[in-house]
Amino acid sequence: MTEVYYVHSQVNQDTKQVSSTLIRRGKEWHSADRMILNGAHIVLVEPVRTDSVVAKLIEELRKQP
Image (cartoon, rainbow, N blue to C red; front, side, top):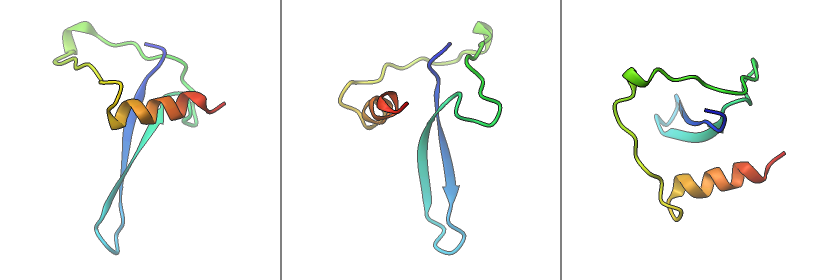
């Protein structure tokens, strides 16, 4: 896969509130440009609706350089 996104969650230690950020793979310190998955380990695949929060966040990330 060459366009991979994942959710990064952080907990505010003072308020215990969780904040989540969508990150595009490749922005990490090692700058991986692809991900190889073992098909035997895939349990579930779900579509993402174009009007979902995830789809909107992905579209915002695609517009960034």
